[in-house]
Image (tube, rainbow, N blue to C red; front, side):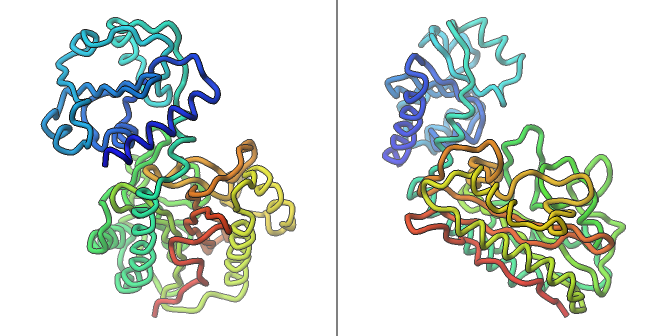
Length: 392
C-alpha cells in the first residue's frame, strides 16, 4: 500500500538525516531497492529527494509499473536519460548505490545530471531494510512456516538410493514450488548466483566454493559450481547437507537441516552436530534489542574450546568469520553477527544463525534457523533446530 511505501521512505530519510544532513538526492538503480520503495521492479531508476519526493523513470515496462505500484503518479516514461533530465537535471549532493552501479552507467548519468558530490548510499539502504515493517514480517513469517514444513515433509520423500545430487536438487525445487516458494533466491553480494541453496551428499558438502558461507558444494562443473553434481550418487550412510533458502512475496528465510540416509550416524558425528545446536541456542539467547553483534560474536567464540574451533564455520583453511546474517529481500542482509558490526540490534530485525562444522571424510554438520528479534528476545521463524534426521 501507499502507507507501507511512505513508511519505508520516512525510515530511509530519517537514517540519512542522522549522518548526512546535507544530502539532496538518492538515486536507486537496483531492482530489489526499486521494489522496496515503489512496489515494482522495472528497467528504470528512482530518485528520492530530501523532502521525500519520488520520481520513477521507466524504460520498460511503464504499463506494469503503473499497474503494480501504489504510487502511479510518481511513474514517468523514459526513452533516455535526457527525458529524466528534462524533469530534474540537478541532483546536488547525490547518494548512489556504489555496490551496484557500473562505471559505464555512472558515466552516462554524469552526461545528463549535475552531481555536486557523490556518496555511497548502500549502508543507509542496508540499515533501513534491516528493521522490518509489520508487512515485511508477515511475509517473512509465512516463508518461515512453509520453509520448515517443506524441509520436514518433502526432503525425506525425495531421497532415494542411487539418485544424483543434480536429480535431488531438481526434485527438491519442484517440491518447493508446491509449498509456495517464489522460485528464486536473491543475494546482495556482487555476482552471487543461487537457485535453491547449497546441497551436498557426504564429503561433497566440504568442497570449497567462492560463496562466503561455511558449507560447501562440488556443483555441476567448474562452469556451474552452484548446482548439484551428476556424478555423486546417494548411498547408504551418506549425510545429506540441505542448506536452502525459501521465499514468499519477496521475503526470504534461510534454514539448514542435515539428514542421514539409510543409517544412524556415528555417535561422534551426532555430538558435533549437537555442539552446533548448543552454539545456536546460546547465540540466540544473546539476541535481544540493544545487544551489539560484535560483542555477541566475541562472547560466543570465547566459550569454544580449541578442539571446537577445528573446522568450525567451514573446513580446513576456509572458515568464515561470522555466526549469522540478516535476511530479507536478500538472503545476505544486515546485520551480521561478527567482528566490526557495532550497531545494536533492534526489534524486528531478522537474522539467520548458522553454526556449522566440517568433519573430514563425512561432510558438514550443523544447523541454520531464521529468527526475528522481539522485545523479549529472538524467536525462531523456521521451526527451530533439530538433530540429524535419519531417512530410512
